[in-house]
Length: 177
Image (cartoon, rainbow, N blue to C red):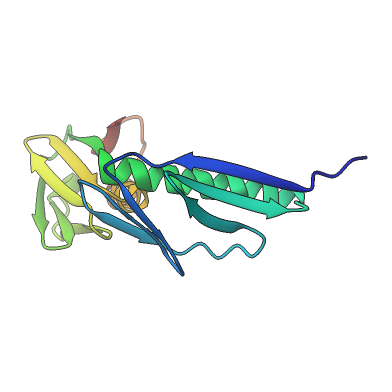
């Protein structure tokens, strides 16, 4: 059995993106700035010219998987600051018309299944929610914040104690860009 001495992964940096590597990885682009701390001990990260180089020596299985995970997170950060992320959701109701409004960092869902008290969903981080008719659009530069905001909206309208084949009311994800 032969062990690889080290594994390196290279990530290309687009021209309009600026990367700073220190305690945190800070990526600045036309859409904004995203920072994140990577603390996995066996992976070293450095910037060379127009590339980010991830490297590990004498890797174990977990080290190999963490290099791939770190690469994916950095690629998502670069995509976020260049293009951004947009998720489209649809408001569906058959029994009671629900009203969805954005108030600060929360989304209020009124009259869901005829309930008297409004349900709320938290908007995470720098994500922005736009409600227009029965369409909800969640946008942002941090993929994790946008995805968690969409999950919060879906969970806020989860139906318990009723037949899901009959009561299909809710806010559902229809498209991830």
